[in-house]
Amino acid sequence: MSLLSRTEELLLLSVWHLQEDAYGLAVRDRMRQLLDRKLSVGAVYVPLERLARKGFLASREADPTPERGGRRTRYYRLTEKGVAALAHVRSVTEEAWAGVPSPLSPSVR
Image (cartoon, rainbow, N blue to C red; front, top):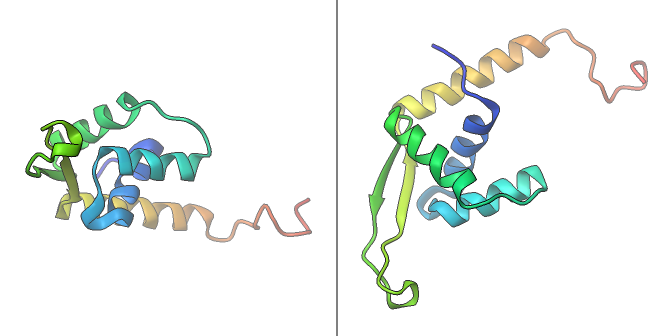
């Protein structure tokens, strides 16, 4: 299994964190919080759709609301493939860090 990019990993983790509330703007806000920087709408929607095409995410459209001017909200959720990809990334990361001194430990500074 190939590894996710860091952006893909953070997007999938954001969707997982948000659960039932994982729609584009909420995902963007979560990513802003994680990365501490501004993100355009396109910086989130384009990779979300790419992850959906790859089978890591599934999406559904909610009924339109008057507040959104009749536009539908698209909600995302992780698929089994998405969960497996995150588990793989976590496993590889933990293995890579095994035995490496923490960069925060006094002996490394």
